[in-house]
Image 1 (tube, rainbow, N blue to C red):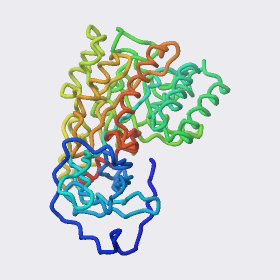
Image 2 (cartoon, rainbow, N blue to C red):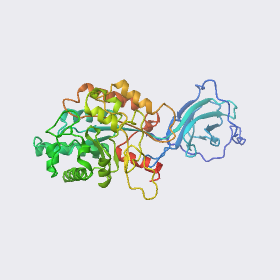
Image 3 (tube, rainbow, N blue to C red):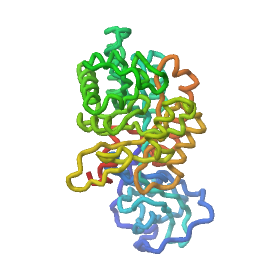
Image 4 (cartoon, one colour):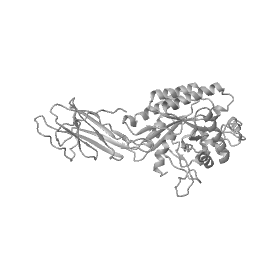
Length: 441
């Protein structure tokens, strides 16, 4: 974010003929029909973030004006704040850094007037907004996503510097005999680079592959598939089939594998096929996870309409839709928010997968989901859009990469760091504090 440096002039305000300048008047001038092109204005960007526990407040507005000759002084009215007189600079410009901390979320106007005029020479919009959090995620459905898919993600970071990705990594990378120790290390090194260079997050994604389940010391379930009558690989088995206790064992084993390979212990989760049940959520709580994003906007996976995967998600996540927002599930109903009465058990943040995955939506649909959650006006409280993709070669083709890239270009047009809108890229773990404060946790 660029910060303008303004030299503050402390000399007594005098006019060219030596008389003291009049004090600014509180009454706002009339807005101009059109801004006067004789004045060049820098700074005064339109969008400013009202911070929360996940994102700091952005509240130091800089205004610099290069005026025409004969300008003795310039006053600024910023929203409902008191009028401010800009300081004359040695280079003949006028400037000021103005705190807008006292402006709550909403739409405002900046008016600039010269020499006490009752008509401003310029009007600029000013928007104060809570963040619009965009979470870009990947689901490691397979043990090795491949170098092509990982290369596409490197391009995303190159072309979208603000981007942060939550990688939901599968622990079967470390239990699948087809992935050699050498290849495991290549993948680990790549993940560490994403984490350490780009501040990406390494979360956890579990499809209950038998090679992972048996490595954890459990018997593999093969008869509760979302696609087939049976699945001897375990890949398409509903994760809820493992209940709370065994799910806890799987989570612990996955965390241990991650830690052994230097990836740290994951704190966020998405179930394979989104097939998390209340027992799954309670097992996540038992193991200290902070957030889950298995709640699916199921209507968007209509490609599976004739399969159990669609039916199960429709029944299990029925209220979740395009605009569903984070909530803290109760300990008795995964769809019911926790009322946090005294003595209520601990829980974790559920951040609905309202943007589903690029695999199931076109670029216009994905951008439409972005618009459905933010209508272009300032937000009173934070909102989230979760989108993702499966980084698997050859499934993550150039066409799908371009779809993701197209969405990122769309989101980049509204980045808070550029004062273009309220968009903040964030990871799942880092977004939790924004909603913790809201719920009084």
